[in-house]
Amino acid sequence: MKILVYGLSSELGGVETIVMSIISRLFGKCSFDVLVSGECAYRGAYERGNVNFLKITSWGSNAYMF
Image 1 (spheres, rainbow, N blue to C red):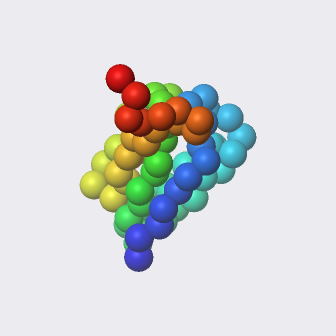
Image 2: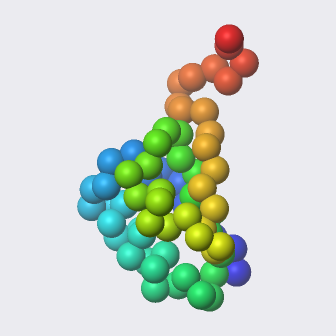
């Protein structure tokens, strides 16, 4: 099963801690794609085979502007 995670901030707070705890418990059973719009404090701890971090344009930014 593949799970998409969206809405986490770049700081390690309450929601991020809960989501990362769930990822740890389901690590061998599911694969995860985590959408982030900036740098993540927790990326290094969870960037393994089943957790893929994908960087997206932040809300309100124009991806086509130079």
